[in-house]
Image (tube, rainbow, N blue to C red; front, side, top):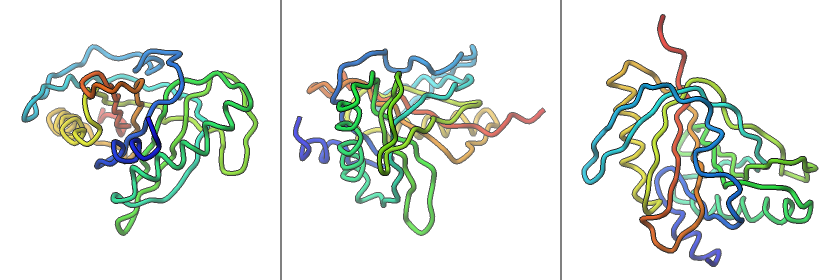
Length: 198
């Protein structure tokens, strides 16, 4: 897949990215322990299974940037294109592409776009070792075009409303291996949750 194709497929509300390297772990692995609390939340065309549990941190090689929704897809591809050459050069064992969304002001969005790393690497320039959030989370898996993920986000938000849980303002996406068939493209979506009321 070319960078131009990636930029086109990556455009959506919330972001997306292409997968360039072989899969060394299944999508959704290293999530932490999922509690038995699960709910099916229907959208217009699909039911999303929303699960909760505790997210364990995942190490990433990532670049932080401020972007806007119209530029989001192109910026994710640009940032990942900065990270992958460094990891290849250092022969780092890698997993999936990951983007962390940290909110923003005035129409901007702060993101960390990077790659799961399972061995050490040396920081270079803007590329730093960071970790995905840890703590209580709600998650669902989306299969299909990145541009159609809004329904999956809506399912997690609906689950939060129905269960009295508040998102903590940080979410992240873990992109499964690229497939030319959109039905086979998996993206795991996570919302960090504020601690449950006691």
